[in-house]
Image (cartoon, rainbow, N blue to C red; front, side, top):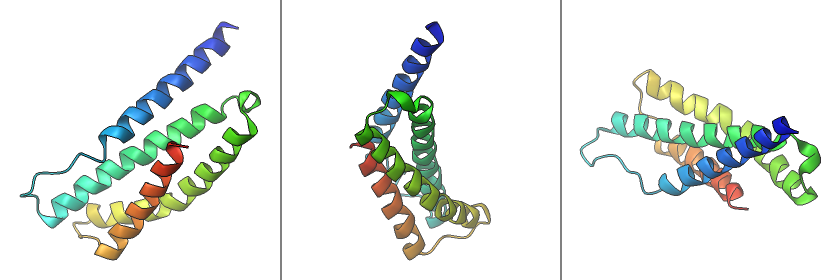
Length: 124
């Protein structure tokens, strides 16, 4: 009984952390004097943080599926599909940045579109 309560509190804490993180992220911008590569590094770190937060939220919510409503399960199915779709694009973007290459605007926009979709699911 105590473990179940702790698990729920942990899931709630992650959910609150995720929401607070997401609310704070859109307004965070790098200084205007960043080089294009520094901007790309900043974006990669920010987007990876959003991805990791959403992935942890997904894991905590699916830890005890018997307590979920069908609507919650449907949102989690969508979130899982989007997390699977985002991972390769985010890894590609990050690998460019790690090699000192500035990703193309099209690559950046594609990753940003996926991140925005993921954040949209977080508000459902």
